[in-house]
Length: 449
Ligand SMILES: C[S@@+](CC[C@H](N)C(=O)[O-])C[C@H]1O[C@@H](n2cnc3c(N)ncnc32)[C@H](O)[C@@H]1O
Image (cartoon, rainbow, N blue to C red; front, side, top):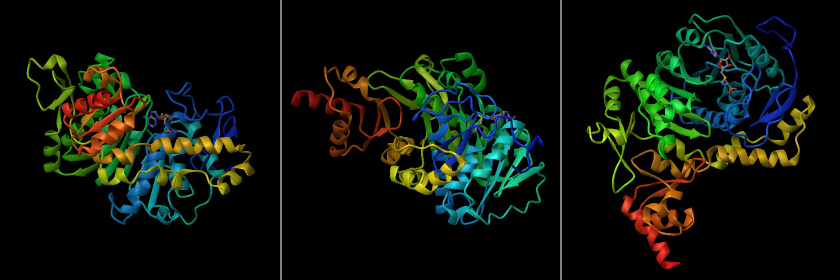
C-alpha cells in the first residue's frame, strides 16, 4: 500500500472482504456482512470504513448524471468539471465516478475526495489499489489554496472539514452526503460552485423533512409538515425549497435535475447558476401544499388563514426534475454504464471477490431499480402534475375494485392525459389529467368489469 493519512502501513482490518458495487470493487470491513441485494433503510452501523449498501442506487444515479453532464455539456460545456465529494467516507462514490464513467470523458473529470475521518480516508486510499487503471488522468493545475492531499489515479484525497474544503476550492459539482441533516453544509457548497454547477445533497433526517418530527422540521427547515400520503413528496420539496432559499440569498438560482425520496433518505440534484433574476423567479416557486375538498391538494404561494391548518410548507412548488436529462436515465443506460462486466468480475476474482451467477442477476436487478420509472415519469415531474396514491383511488372514487396500475395509466394516456408511475416504494402515479378525469377512469373500469 502507498501513502495514507495516518502514516500506517495499512488500515486496521485491511483488506476485509470483497463486494462489487456497480463496476467497482469494494473492500468491506470483516464485521460488515455481505450486503443482501436491494438493501433498504438506514445503516445498521455507521462506523469508520462502513459503506452503506442501501445508498448504492443513489450512487448509481450520481454516476449516470455526472456522465450525462460530461457527455451533453450541461454544466461546463466541453470544459473540465471539478467534482468534490465533500464527505466521501471510504471513497466509494469517487471511485465509481472514476471507474464507471466512460473513459473518453475522464480527462475532463477532476475529482477531489474529502473527509475528516483518518481511518475512512486510509481505507479509501487502500481501496484504490484494486481499481482498474483508467490511465493518463491529468491532475488539476490549481492556483487555489488546497489542504494537503494525496493523489491516486487523478483523485485528490484530502482531510479537512467539508466546509473548509468548499471555502478553499471552486467546483462545478459538489456532493454532500452527511450523516443526518445536510443543512450546515448547504451555504458553503452553494458558494463553492462556479458560475454554473451542480449540487447533489443527501438528507437522512427524514423525520424533520416530512414533519413527523415537527420541532426539528421547524427548527432546521422552517417547515410545518403534515404526515400523510404526501409527506415523502413534501420532504423532497422542503429540501429543494431550503436550497432555493439559501441560493437566492446568495444571488443564485436553482433548477432541479432529479429529486427523489428513496426509502430512508431524500436525495436532490440541482443545477445552480449565479443569477439575480433567476433567484427572484425561484422565489415565485416557493409555496404550500393545501389539502382541499374535492381534490387531494393544490399548491399555492400563500395559504389563507383558513387553509393554514391543512397546509404544509413552505416548500418548493416548481418542477422536480429536468425532462431532457431524466428522459435519458433509462434502465438500458444504467445497465450499460454501471453493470459489472466479465472483465470486472475477473479482476475482482484476482483480488479475492466471490461472485456467483445469482449475484450478477441481483446486481442487474438493483441497477435497473435505481432508475426504474424515471425516464417515463420525466415529462410529468418536470412540470405541473397531480400526484395520486394508486391504493387510495378506490376510496376516492368510491368503488370496490381497481384496474391494474398499468391499465389505468394506459387508459388515461389513451384519453390524452399524460400519466406515468413515479419512482416511490409505494405505488404513486403522476398525471396531467384533472382529478375528476382520473376518478371517472377508475369508475369506468368498475362498470366494465
Ligand atoms: C454518510 S457518510 C458518507 C458516505 C459516503 N458518501 C458514501 O457514499 O459511502 C458521512 C461522512 O461524513 C464525514 N464527516 C462528518 N462531518 C464532517 C465534516 N464536518 N467534514 C468532513 N467530513 C465529515 C464522516 O467522517 C463520514 O465519513
